[in-house]
Image 1 (cartoon, rainbow, N blue to C red):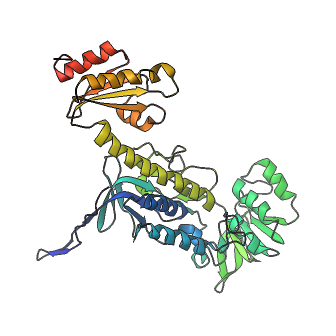
Image 2: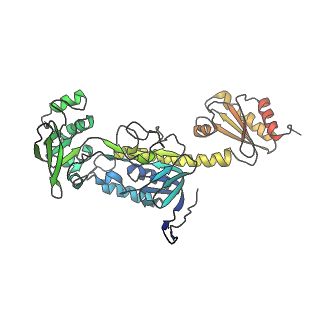
Image 3: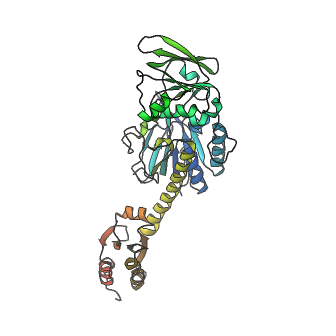
Length: 435
């Protein structure tokens, strides 16, 4: 495990200019983003005793902290506030020794074995990086909107805030699948759901089934050819002013909450051309949260996936945290044990579920013994040690790999019989067996 090293930030004066000296810190894991996914990954990494730092540019807890009431997170039958839940996550991560830094990440270098994450004053070097930078809802950018975002009348999560709007009047901005489906969900609680649709009647951006169901819903009222011009109210939102795109007239609607469903934007700008992304700029991972770059994982709302909720973010973060721990352990095993430099190396790739390759194990151990401590045998199960096999570039079993004391691979072979293996080892040991 890497030890902390820190070059203190200093200000140098050369007589004409002031220069900021960059501080370098080394960690096992750097987590970018402090929402539910990043915090969960931090808990797992910290509990595994990995030297971990989490970097968050705004508020630890992310967008979840702006949700007044969360009723669908397991373990809280009476519900909980987003802020309260995230404070618990934060406290638990700190309990396991995770360090926190509130700053913005400026750039990343992820290709090398040692990853680099750079902020304004610091460069963090790490064995692994977990990207949990989340996303942000797309907003209308209408007048006064910033005054009422999140917990002051403008919401982006019907599942989170529907119950709080029981028997109230709400507005939905948007007509895509998410907007209409969330609007219908809201109609189970609210007394009226007003929907601002930018298109002519009856055109919507959602699928036809959702459109027909919404039009038939007695609690849903469509306001066609409109877009938000401004938001009004005192400390909490009270009115949404819609502008008719054909007539130019403005109509005010008294509402308790306005739900905006006009899209979502991932926070992936600094990962452009560095991580594999979808057309919508979400990071693409496999089910192990791997990005395709060894040692780099992504989790939570920043990745391309179907459902974006606190519960799914927690699952992603757990997988990423375990993945980072496993990657570091396997790296240390690969460097210190598999590719050890004390003796000639012999690696045997086999499958535990394949009887013929499994039955060759005693023969490989016998060969190792015949070379009087000059050869070190390492055995890798292709299934359980897949990532180790990937590092070695082998996807066939049974297979043997031979390498010198300086770690240089000299030969690979799928001929796994005693004569062939001994002949290959003799070339490296440079003496016949028994001499």
